[in-house]
Length: 191
Image 1 (tube, rainbow, N blue to C red):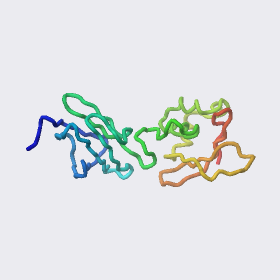
Image 2: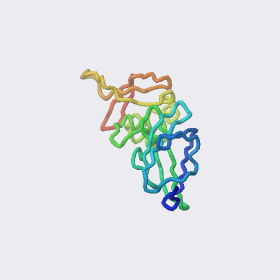
Image 3: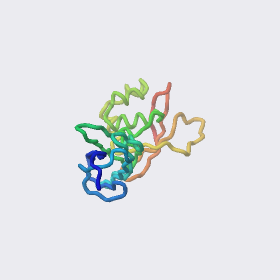
Image 4: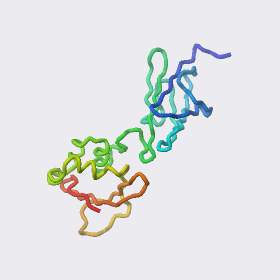
Protein backbone atom coordinates (compact mmCIF):
# COMPACT_ATOMS: atom_id res chain seq x y z
CA UNK A 1 0.00 0.00 0.00
CA UNK A 2 1.34 3.41 -0.99
CA UNK A 3 1.41 6.08 1.71
CA UNK A 4 0.46 9.24 -0.23
CA UNK A 5 0.46 11.41 2.90
CA UNK A 6 4.25 11.21 3.25
CA UNK A 7 4.93 11.70 -0.45
CA UNK A 8 5.49 14.87 -2.39
CA UNK A 9 5.17 15.72 -6.07
CA UNK A 10 8.49 16.24 -7.81
CA UNK A 11 8.95 18.09 -11.10
CA UNK A 12 12.30 17.73 -12.86
CA UNK A 13 13.26 19.88 -15.83
CA UNK A 14 16.21 20.79 -18.03
CA UNK A 15 16.83 23.22 -20.90
CA UNK A 16 18.28 20.41 -23.01
CA UNK A 17 17.02 17.04 -24.27
CA UNK A 18 17.76 14.24 -21.85
CA UNK A 19 16.59 11.00 -20.32
CA UNK A 20 16.99 10.14 -16.65
CA UNK A 21 17.80 7.38 -14.26
CA UNK A 22 15.77 7.93 -11.10
CA UNK A 23 17.35 5.78 -8.39
CA UNK A 24 18.65 3.60 -11.22
CA UNK A 25 15.34 3.25 -13.07
CA UNK A 26 15.18 4.58 -16.64
CA UNK A 27 12.69 7.40 -17.25
CA UNK A 28 12.17 9.37 -20.42
CA UNK A 29 10.05 11.96 -18.63
CA UNK A 30 10.40 13.14 -15.03
CA UNK A 31 8.00 16.08 -15.20
CA UNK A 32 5.72 15.01 -12.37
CA UNK A 33 5.79 12.04 -10.01
CA UNK A 34 5.17 11.20 -6.35
CA UNK A 35 8.14 10.38 -4.16
CA UNK A 36 8.66 9.82 -0.41
CA UNK A 37 9.54 13.22 1.06
CA UNK A 38 12.09 11.89 3.58
CA UNK A 39 14.01 9.66 1.14
CA UNK A 40 17.03 10.80 -0.90
CA UNK A 41 16.53 10.79 -4.66
CA UNK A 42 19.43 10.02 -7.01
CA UNK A 43 18.95 11.56 -10.44
CA UNK A 44 21.31 10.61 -13.24
CA UNK A 45 21.07 12.94 -16.21
CA UNK A 46 21.81 11.36 -19.60
CA UNK A 47 21.89 14.22 -22.12
CA UNK A 48 20.92 13.42 -25.70
CA UNK A 49 23.44 15.96 -27.00
CA UNK A 50 26.98 14.69 -27.57
CA UNK A 51 28.62 17.88 -26.25
CA UNK A 52 27.07 17.46 -22.78
CA UNK A 53 28.25 15.01 -20.13
CA UNK A 54 26.08 12.79 -17.94
CA UNK A 55 26.15 13.24 -14.18
CA UNK A 56 24.29 12.30 -11.01
CA UNK A 57 22.86 14.53 -8.30
CA UNK A 58 21.55 13.52 -4.89
CA UNK A 59 18.57 15.43 -3.54
CA UNK A 60 16.55 15.30 -0.37
CA UNK A 61 13.35 17.29 -0.53
CA UNK A 62 14.15 20.69 -2.01
CA UNK A 63 17.85 20.46 -1.22
CA UNK A 64 20.59 19.24 -3.49
CA UNK A 65 23.16 17.28 -1.45
CA UNK A 66 25.67 16.31 -4.17
CA UNK A 67 26.69 18.22 -7.32
CA UNK A 68 24.75 21.23 -6.09
CA UNK A 69 26.28 23.45 -8.79
CA UNK A 70 24.43 21.37 -11.40
CA UNK A 71 21.06 21.45 -9.65
CA UNK A 72 18.64 24.14 -8.57
CA UNK A 73 15.93 22.80 -6.28
CA UNK A 74 13.10 24.66 -4.61
CA UNK A 75 9.60 24.16 -3.16
CA UNK A 76 6.58 25.89 -4.62
CA UNK A 77 2.88 25.14 -4.82
CA UNK A 78 3.23 22.13 -2.51
CA UNK A 79 5.69 20.42 -4.86
CA UNK A 80 9.44 20.20 -5.29
CA UNK A 81 10.88 21.63 -8.49
CA UNK A 82 14.33 20.51 -9.62
CA UNK A 83 16.11 22.26 -12.46
CA UNK A 84 19.13 20.37 -13.79
CA UNK A 85 21.82 22.34 -15.56
CA UNK A 86 24.10 21.29 -18.43
CA UNK A 87 27.54 19.84 -17.77
CA UNK A 88 29.90 20.58 -20.63
CA UNK A 89 32.71 18.31 -21.76
CA UNK A 90 35.46 20.85 -21.11
CA UNK A 91 34.37 22.11 -17.72
CA UNK A 92 33.13 20.25 -14.70
CA UNK A 93 30.56 22.71 -13.49
CA UNK A 94 27.34 24.23 -14.61
CA UNK A 95 28.77 27.69 -14.16
CA UNK A 96 29.16 29.12 -17.62
CA UNK A 97 32.53 30.68 -16.91
CA UNK A 98 33.93 27.24 -16.23
CA UNK A 99 36.28 28.44 -13.50
CA UNK A 100 36.65 28.36 -9.78
CA UNK A 101 37.38 31.22 -7.44
CA UNK A 102 41.06 30.26 -7.28
CA UNK A 103 41.52 30.26 -11.08
CA UNK A 104 44.47 32.13 -12.50
CA UNK A 105 44.16 35.56 -14.12
CA UNK A 106 44.58 34.11 -17.66
CA UNK A 107 41.77 31.61 -17.00
CA UNK A 108 39.44 34.28 -15.62
CA UNK A 109 40.34 36.53 -18.56
CA UNK A 110 39.65 33.78 -21.12
CA UNK A 111 36.22 32.91 -19.77
CA UNK A 112 35.23 36.58 -19.44
CA UNK A 113 36.02 37.01 -23.15
CA UNK A 114 34.12 33.80 -24.04
CA UNK A 115 31.08 35.09 -22.13
CA UNK A 116 31.38 38.35 -24.07
CA UNK A 117 31.93 40.19 -20.79
CA UNK A 118 34.63 42.41 -22.24
CA UNK A 119 34.45 44.97 -19.44
CA UNK A 120 35.41 42.24 -16.96
CA UNK A 121 38.06 40.86 -19.34
CA UNK A 122 39.71 44.28 -19.55
CA UNK A 123 40.06 44.35 -15.76
CA UNK A 124 42.54 41.48 -16.17
CA UNK A 125 44.57 43.39 -18.80
CA UNK A 126 47.32 45.96 -18.26
CA UNK A 127 46.62 49.51 -19.39
CA UNK A 128 49.18 49.10 -22.16
CA UNK A 129 47.47 46.00 -23.58
CA UNK A 130 43.99 47.52 -23.19
CA UNK A 131 45.04 50.55 -25.26
CA UNK A 132 46.36 48.39 -28.12
CA UNK A 133 43.37 46.11 -28.75
CA UNK A 134 39.72 46.80 -29.55
CA UNK A 135 36.73 44.66 -28.56
CA UNK A 136 36.34 43.03 -31.98
CA UNK A 137 40.00 41.98 -32.11
CA UNK A 138 39.86 40.64 -28.57
CA UNK A 139 36.79 38.55 -29.32
CA UNK A 140 38.17 37.37 -32.67
CA UNK A 141 41.47 36.28 -31.11
CA UNK A 142 39.69 33.74 -28.87
CA UNK A 143 36.84 32.88 -31.25
CA UNK A 144 38.18 29.46 -32.29
CA UNK A 145 38.96 28.30 -28.75
CA UNK A 146 36.60 26.61 -26.31
CA UNK A 147 38.78 26.07 -23.24
CA UNK A 148 42.02 27.02 -21.53
CA UNK A 149 44.33 24.64 -19.66
CA UNK A 150 47.47 25.62 -17.77
CA UNK A 151 50.60 23.99 -19.12
CA UNK A 152 52.22 21.62 -16.67
CA UNK A 153 55.47 21.61 -18.67
CA UNK A 154 56.69 25.12 -17.95
CA UNK A 155 59.93 26.19 -19.57
CA UNK A 156 62.64 27.23 -17.15
CA UNK A 157 63.87 29.88 -19.63
CA UNK A 158 64.86 32.89 -17.46
CA UNK A 159 63.99 35.26 -20.35
CA UNK A 160 60.38 34.04 -20.50
CA UNK A 161 58.03 36.21 -18.46
CA UNK A 162 54.62 34.80 -17.70
CA UNK A 163 52.78 31.50 -17.71
CA UNK A 164 52.03 28.98 -20.45
CA UNK A 165 48.45 27.99 -21.20
CA UNK A 166 46.99 25.79 -23.91
CA UNK A 167 44.02 27.21 -25.75
CA UNK A 168 41.85 24.30 -26.88
CA UNK A 169 39.84 24.41 -30.11
CA UNK A 170 36.66 22.52 -31.00
CA UNK A 171 38.70 19.62 -32.39
CA UNK A 172 40.27 19.24 -28.91
CA UNK A 173 43.66 20.42 -30.13
CA UNK A 174 45.74 22.75 -27.99
CA UNK A 175 47.98 25.66 -28.94
CA UNK A 176 50.44 26.86 -26.31
CA UNK A 177 50.36 30.58 -25.54
CA UNK A 178 52.47 32.56 -23.10
CA UNK A 179 50.55 35.04 -20.96
CA UNK A 180 53.05 37.72 -19.92
CA UNK A 181 52.11 39.52 -16.72
CA UNK A 182 52.82 43.05 -15.47
CA UNK A 183 51.69 44.12 -11.98
CA UNK A 184 49.45 41.08 -11.77
CA UNK A 185 47.69 41.84 -15.08
CA UNK A 186 48.06 40.37 -18.58
CA UNK A 187 50.46 42.53 -20.57
CA UNK A 188 50.97 40.39 -23.67
CA UNK A 189 49.88 37.07 -25.17
CA UNK A 190 52.23 35.28 -27.53
CA UNK A 191 52.82 31.80 -28.90
